[in-house]
Image 1: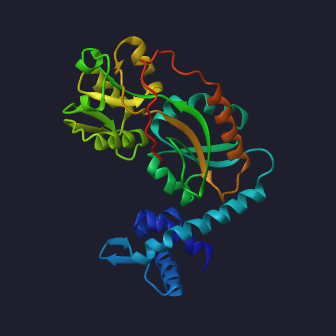
Image 2: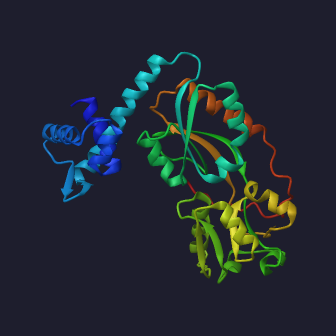
Image 3: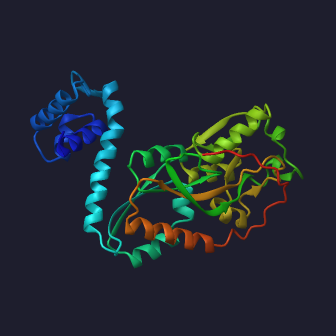
Length: 315
């Protein structure tokens, strides 16, 4: 089994197209076909189904894919370890949800770019649930997410900040005028939420299920900015980290509900695979994130008082 075969397999498994794969590996299509056939002959099973012009992974191909990824990642880590000195350099792949990238990381990235200009950072905006598989498959080096705890034995985590997560609405919404908002008050209400798979959205879903509360229409958003605009337009109640809406709260465009149900608060955490080689770039970024976020002030808005009740939700 050759490294070239695994590299071609990885790209073909992503592209599911022989022509595009040949372009990405800078060879002709017939060579891609020959390399995949040689790999299949060695393994004794077909890895791809060729259905006319359509290409799909077989069940064996799907089972083989994570092992091929790990083998290539181990080889690439070894190459980086040999090339790397004490100075951080080379590629650094980071996965994180939009809220952290947009509202927590800009100060980190500005300092990091000044200190370590030879590191090539790339971001993958992902939901928390996706980040776990991305780390385990070696597609990213580090992840930042909001979660209560990390229970995966393959991952290592460092908590860097506690995030206040609350329900918000337009100031004219009836629930913003209530002195106490309980889970039952969300019965029949229109909710504007991040996509399923978002950690604090999952927490709200669990609370509503446990309390047997049925909201009205639920609108899912992949964009936090679009979600904020719709909340400010009075389209419903939304659940977001306070740092995301701090500006809107100061300008009076949004108002926090006086929530008395279980807390939605979560921690921002840095995650990486326990078996991964910690490159100088990874270590530098991880340490700078912790140093910078630990010193960042919380939003200046004064949240309404609420009880200390909590609902534990693990990643």
